[in-house]
Image (cartoon, rainbow, N blue to C red):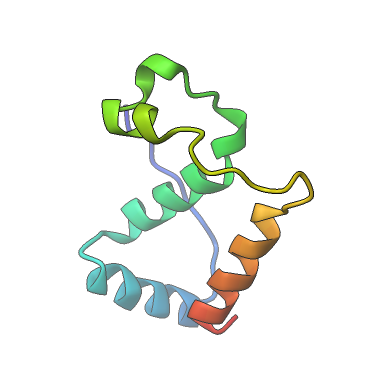
Amino acid sequence: MNTKLTLTIEKEVIEIAKKYAKEKGQSLSELVENYFKFVTAERVKVSEKQLSPKVRKLRGIIKANDNLDYKQILTEELSKKYGV
């Protein structure tokens, strides 16, 4: 069920976000919803049954160091990509 949400955001940011969403073939609402899903993903636990067969097969095949901070790497790469 969808619910209406009112946000107060700078006009310039909204215009840039609208252009970005249009380039990606999404509505601004979809863009915001996807962002919220992304930032709250840790709170939602995905069960093994919810994964597609391909993802289940690939799960765990990459081994990384215990001190690897993937969130930091992701943040750095997204910053480079979007110039933030």
